[in-house]
Image 1 (cartoon, rainbow, N blue to C red):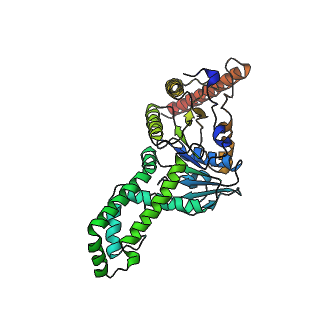
Image 2 (image 1 turned 90 degrees about the horizontal axis):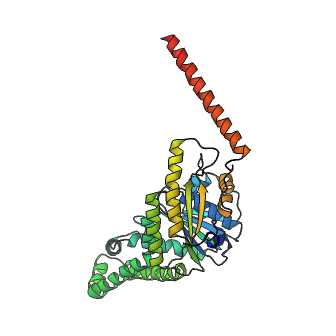
Image 3 (image 1 turned 90 degrees about the vertical axis):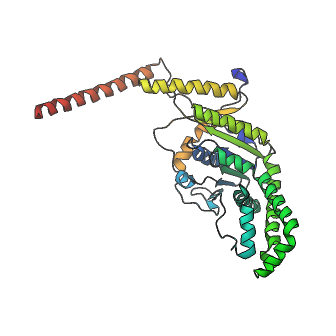
Amino acid sequence: MAAPEDMPEGTVRNVLQQETLKWVFVGGKGGVGKTTCSSILSILLASARSSVLIISTDPAHNLSDAFQQRFTKAPTLVNGFTNLYAMEVDPNVEEGEDGAEGMDGFLSDLANSIPGIDEAMSFAEMLKLVQTMDYSVIVFDTAPTGHTLRLLQFPSTLEKGLSKMMSLKSKFGGLLGQMSRLFGVGDELGEDAILGRLEGMKDVIEQVNRQFKDPDLTTFVCVCIPEFLSLYETERLVQELTKFEIDTHNIIINQVLFDEEGVESKLLKARMKMQQKYLDQFYMLYDDFNITKLPLLPEEVCGVEALKAFSKHFKKPYEHSIAKGTVEELEVRVSRLQEQLREVVSQLEKARKADQLL
């Protein structure tokens, strides 16, 4: 384990300062705050880059909630910005998109029977679209871990699909041609059109895949919370990313309870102790990562102003508002005890009145 002075800084400034980055993925288990983190990262990048696009590939689509603005599958300028755009993409291909009829329908069904091919084609289409746009950096708010790992396997999925289609074409090429004439389907809707489309997508996805494996162009930010399942999921994600040769050196630990303001609650203290155990494990496992700890807030971070206000914790490690053993801490404890005393007196008063009514 690295000595404290050798440990990387607990912020995401390394991501903001890496000017060569083109793709930033933000992912992790469901419900850990990925969308909030990716939204804040895109806001911070917008202040350092010429243009930023944030894309949600999560079917739950929470980007609209985070920014409190409606987004669609076309890039839309985020209110209050001149260079930050957002879009929400459905990871599945819409039915009937190609007007699948006759032979074309048969081959589309055949292609789609290959596991994951529909998502792969949809993702390739989206990347094709994104590559024609001129954005300095693109942030992906990804679906929960399992979907994200499938997304990273898309190049090989498309390759399998293409080779399967090609082998079928070589075996049944003549028959398919006769059938397409029989169905009255022209060449533009025949197997060549679909194979051409697959081939074109394979080229795009291979090109992008090369970029994904380049640490100068791509990084993956893992978001988690200090609990066992999240630690386990993060470890699985980091191992898979390493297997796919995708750079990752940032972990954001969200919803951390800090021991401040003279907390008296036994439940909160037990929770803090449990969290500390997992925080220690994170630091032990990922001593060469930039680990950013974010505090648990009493309210959701929604809207541009709230996101901007919370973003300071991404650039500077969160500091306890009140140091233990100070006069300030003592004053807070006295004030909390007085508040608790008032509550008890109020409840006793209510109980006394209830007794009188009886």
